Length: 144
Image (tube, rainbow, N blue to C red):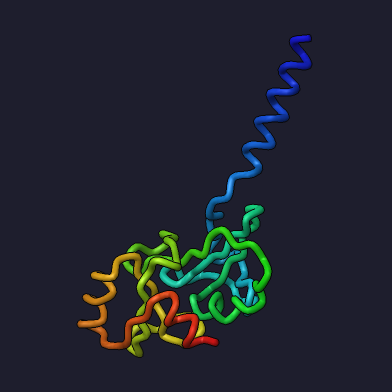
């Protein structure tokens, strides 16, 4: 009887742990971009989409992820994540971020597109590097 209880607890634990939807760490230099297939090496521009089932799709640049969005129509996406330019390797909510396109900040695919968790930091960077600011909504419109 105790053996069956232990088995049931293990099965329930496994089921609950496998349902967690969270970012998956990017293995820089090893993972490839889901869109362009290039290796992901830039810690300031990498992005990730996570489905409601917890499957992660990684991108080497914000522009790759945004250009790939039409291919996700009808798919349940739980997380859209970008790297905060000011904190390399730190994934943040793409839908709440502020974006800067500046010729003075190159990005992996040449769109000069960077993302910031803080609107204030994005504005400060814009003051020093120039460029134009976007929200998630206006960025998606630009790349339609």
